[in-house]
Amino acid sequence: MVFHEGAYIYREGEPAQHFYLIRHGRVALEVHVPGRAPLIVDSLRAGEPLGWSWLIPPYRTHFDARALELTRVISFDAECLRQKMEENPAFGYALHKRMAPVIAARLAAARRQIIDIYGRPDDRRTAWQ
Amino acid sequence: MAIAALEDRMQPRPFLVERLTQDASDTFTLVLRPQHGSQPFPFQPGQFNMLYLYGVGEVPISISGDPEDPEQLVHTIRALGTVTSAMQKLKKGSVVGVRGPFGTAWPVDEAAGADVVIIAGGLGLAPLRPAIYAILAKRRQYGRVVILYGARTPKDILFRQQLERWGGRMDTFVDVTVDRAPSDWRGNVGVVSSLIGRGGFEPEHTIAFVCGPEVMIRYAVHALSDRGVPNERIYLSMERNMKCGAGFCGHCQWGGHFVCREGPVFRFDAIADLFEVREL
Ligand SMILES: Cc1cc2nc3c(=O)[nH]c(=O)nc-3n(C[C@H](O)[C@H](O)[C@H](O)COP(=O)(O)OP(=O)(O)OC[C@H]3O[C@@H](n4cnc5c(N)ncnc54)[C@H](O)[C@@H]3O)c2cc1C
Ligand code: FES
Image (cartoon, rainbow over all chains, first blue to last red; front, side):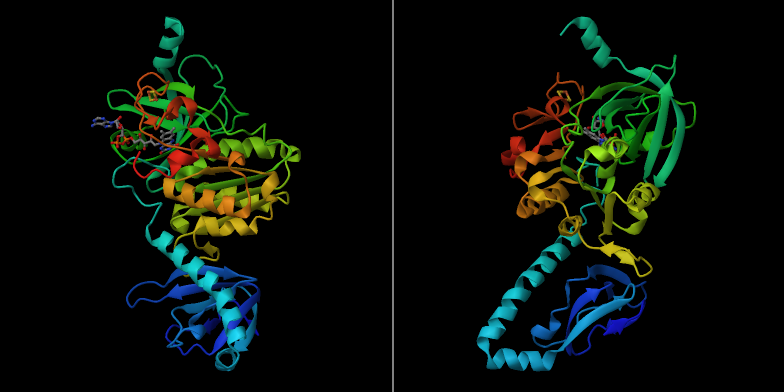
């Protein structure tokens, strides 16, 4: 599938019907807060999986995903994948084993981002922020 | 140490502000030249000066200029407190006292023949810029050169035009990321350590220079180790409060080290154990 620059691949809160792998291009994950300008909180590149909401109930997307440039993705039907994982636990486990590190790495990165390491230090001990 | 040499280290030399440019709302670059004569000011990348604002106070600030251009003394400063905020108000012709250069340097010459990975966060790019100048001036002596930079938001990116220029060179890989961005930002969003995998360097033949907030240094060092860069090939620059800057007062003590004399640039294996200690 091809998404042109600016096109939304999915929107926050939608049922996660697909699992995407980015083959080419870049994708921004955005949060829209009413009354505030949208904020990009992560960006993904070629070779990276896009989203994991399809894997974890209630299978709803958490962010808006927008192509930052012409982006090509491989798309898998989430429903079909989930069914195969149920039927074939070895396959299901293998896929979980691949996705778990991705989810863990993104969680750790998100936590680092919110500690605002470049912000003004309280104790003024450092300035190289 | 002979008294004369000691006085030399403790006595600020007067310099005049040649130029003050605003890099971001609270960050500015000061270009200084000697008040008397035109003696050049040789320094090594990574070293710092004690800058003295008469009647206000003295602060350690890294040199951010080109070591090949010792006629100009350049510092990039974040207005944080009493002294640095007063410095932001300086005008062309104002006098600043300078003691230095002090401290250890990035091992730019020793890195010849290796891939070089430079990881900077926030204002940490300032102490690394002299090393980047020196490496790019002798670009052929190095393998891959990778510059990874993280900032808070796109507005906070330091030396933006220079980063773009370096990134435009065919022989240098530059990648920039921010923690969050408005929707018109076309670049990366995420932590700087997440860029490490994209550098395409050979870990065991890499020398890495890291500077930024201490937490960022920690994550970057872990990410480099995870990739296989040996501890003895990772260098980082530490920041501690200082008074004399010259190894006399002990104000900058960190574990068993005086940061002003044995640092600010340390080889990671020499301080790895201290680095994991929580409050020092
Ligand atoms: C090796 C090294 C390199 C550095 N490089 C840079 C750099 O390139 N750019 C940069 O922006 N920062 C750099 N810093 C950090 C910089 O030195 C501090 O941000 C700076 O010292 C803050 O000083 P301030 O007076 O503005 O802030 P304050 O927090 O107000 O004061 C910090 C220090 O100033 C003195 N001081 C100021 N006011 C008072 C007072 N009222 N009473 C008593 N003491 C006072 C004290 O010594 C105090 O510890 C570096 C630090 C080190 C150690
Ligand atoms: S600042 Fe005085 S010994 Fe380091």
